[in-house]
Length: 516
Image 1 (cartoon, rainbow, N blue to C red):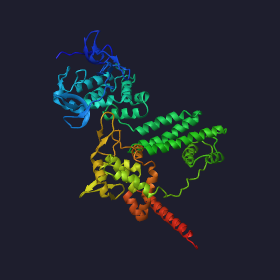
Image 2 (image 1 turned 180 degrees about the vertical axis):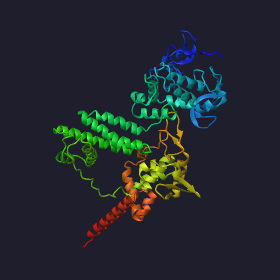
Image 3 (image 1 turned 120 degrees about the vertical axis):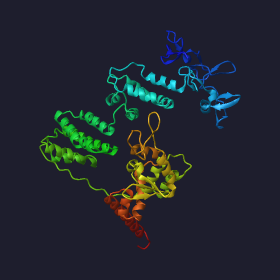
Image 4 (image 1 turned 90 degrees about the vertical axis):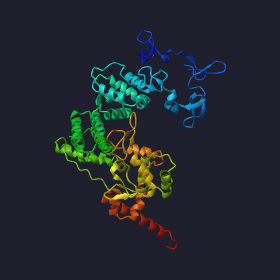
């Protein structure tokens, strides 16, 4: 069949055109005459007309709902065959609605422009590269191949995410080519994270530890807040020596909690440097009196500057050695929320009629029943969930924790649902029980908390305490440690706190008895 595609002079897209190859080329969509819609007043191709002849666009036209002749569900009618109605999905699958593609001759359900899904997806991919090649072609060919190899529906899903498509378009045309640095320049926030994960997954960009990379960039940007060059250099050297080098040496990627703690410490260092300058002093002239004064004016986390001040003294950047007291151990409080509140939320996770994914259901039950930290839940591997003789157990600590039969369905669904949210289509993961959006990484505790928050778990810490309290009462500390992955000191602290709480409660009850 003769190729009728060309670049439309109206919309600029490569599509089947009238007068293709000439200066008058125009695609079928642009060639159709448009009129103002009687309802929304937008200038669109009429899809229907009112009794008085007024036009209605496809959006404003009344939807005909009938039982589909194929699936039997009440849905919007797409077309009819011998009077029988068919919905959109069944119409696309039914060969009676298929025709030969105007370009590749595939026998498929065609778009309005006469193209099959494969050709339509190819045109969408080509539209990303229409702006002309960048001076550096790094990754462009790999990206085009990855998009061309994707199923058409995956490409259509991608182009529904307009922000991500805009990022890809800007990245393709970037003068520096496709790289981690250029992506950071054209995108930020969730769009940057999603696009970067997609490029890494398809081999366009090399994998890197994103938390470590963001921390390194944050340290460099934060150092600019220090006016004195010598103090700025000391801040950078300390951040690289104490934190960045340690994170690079560890085998696992940097965790969210690790990075958050480091940023808090370095933020306090920036604050103490500025405070000393406001008092006419500096790191070189720091003394015990100034440090004590600063510590007394803020939260207890300020004691973290001890490492920086000690490092400065040992490297002859500070003239005096200062002493900062260790953090005081705070008493563990077991007061969380009432058992009624816990069961109200837990009933939702145990109700099989609720539309909750197996992963989310299992995570919520592990928190509400056993008080397991969300960070530890997110780090579970698929091999940690085990099945023997129809009974499921999960390895949190050193000994497997046998799950009640009410969690079997959640465990089965979590075991077989290996999907992870990605840019085009959900990807599968064979390692993590809770796979994340970044290839090779598990779901973050922040994302897991957001899922549970939608189901009523607004404060995971309180629910964790409410679950651990009865367990600490009924189980010895060593057993609690082995089953729930707690350190023996933490398990002992819980047992002591529960005993103290019970003793205080009993004393309070006795003191209120008449005659005492």
